[in-house]
Length: 549
Image 1: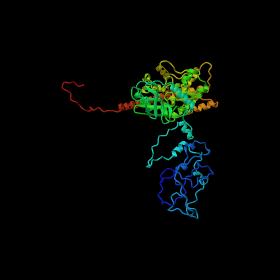
Image 2 (image 1 turned 135 degrees about the vertical axis):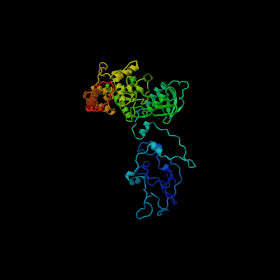
Image 3 (image 1 turned 180 degrees about the vertical axis):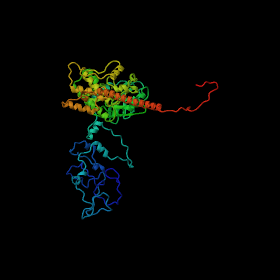
Image 4 (image 1 turned 30 degrees about the vertical axis):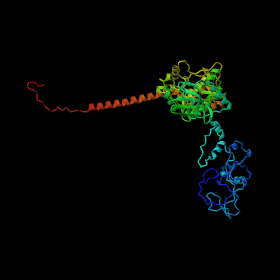
């Protein structure tokens, strides 16, 4: 049989008895979210409804807690039958899970007279929460509608709210960068200003890619296409980046999809995460919120070098974004001022995680690997071997901080190959000597930038946690110590190497000397062994005419 909660009742069939004034359903469930304490339930002569009697409607959920329920018509239902006479016991065996009989009497225990009494009698561990359910919870509790034949009706897809709204509705903090409606309108207007006519034969305009509908063409860069699109489930605009898996860049984009699908979806308050990413037969795509605010490269060109406090804010916030990536065993791959945005003063967001592309002119470097990123911000080990690690991300962040304080990149030039070779063969110049005239930077900040941009991973921070610890120490006025009390690990490491080589040579020479000694002794022993003359005592006949000796 079907209970009032819209689900099938799995209890065994029982013999029909006289009608009672008790509604069908679960006897143990007490709804306290709708009826206020002290209010009596509906009288017995009210029409009996279905599950909507105790359901919370969506228009009531949005009301603030404690607000009075607006009166309204109750759902139609069959008339409730009159109650049975007093003292008449119910027929048939007691149902499993029903109330036990009263001591000294027959029939089940007296049911509570009101919702308040039922809530007071309920054990604290079993009382439902007093807050009204959210819209999402009420929608989940809503029973599916059925046709006249009993089959479930096909439900239209529900529009999912934006992730930040969903998190707020459930009382959870959002992991995405915070935006106001004004921010969204400003970002959309800036993106629409970049829209241009689509090239002839564009294969994606007007097409659906996953949950996105491609609306208008924005730009194209070495095979990558960017569009203004609409997320159909969330009904929000998006910047859709499409990487075709066929054509001249198909193999490169396949490697990019393998490398970037996970990083671009990592969420952090200072990381521009993709709304959705995925693949089709002919493309890899990733959709993002329309970009908000200028990049740091644009800020630097317009405003010049930044103050120490602003630069360290960049280091902290971008460092936390890198920590979110590194915590999931992925890297960003191409730190630089052109992938960090300032949506509002004092707030910085890192974008493009995992979507770095190699440069064809640099393919002969990195021992067969890919050199990702902007020359001038690429770690030496990446130039040398194509390694992309946490340490290479921190090196890029150190070069960004160096650039923001000095007003120029530590390595610059028109020849990108020469810039990368300079990074491979030289350390980052001392920041104190590169500061603009009159600029003042604390010793703690100089040390932090130096520990970020060390030449090898041995002289950089091990991870973001060590970086944040130094930033906290600076805020407290404590000294930020360089590595090893002034002794650089890369200066001590060559000495250790020389010592190790010397010891190895000494051991090898000693082994050779021992081996030669054993060979000489064996030879001398062999010489000292007396050997008998095999012809001793043997007379050999001489030919005739041979004079004796």
